[in-house]
Amino acid sequence: KRKTQLTLQGGNQMEYQYKSTEELPPFLNASQVAAYLGLSLSNIYTLMHSQGFPTLAVGKRKIVEKKKLLQWIEENTAK
Image 1 (cartoon, rainbow, N blue to C red):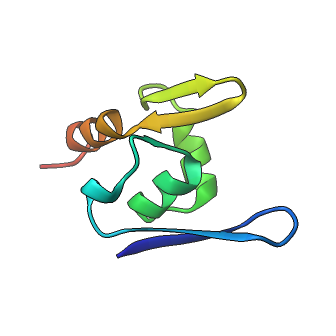
Image 2 (spheres, rainbow, N blue to C red):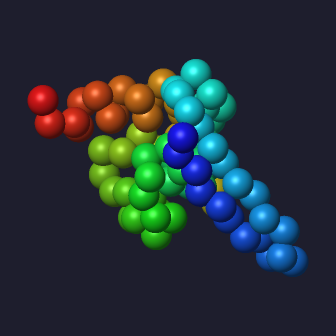
């Protein structure tokens, strides 16, 4: 299980846990990508702003389509 806990303004907490790719939503925010990849949120923000990473801008927010994330992982994993 991969999980990340996020504390929001006002003290509310959100936790994302994924056992498999089937559990991922169709579009992921930075916290969800961090939970799935097991990386820190700051590393994910850097990754989401890097050239070649499949982000989609929605206003000021950046999200990642699940199928494009999985494709990016496949293409960028050492074999």
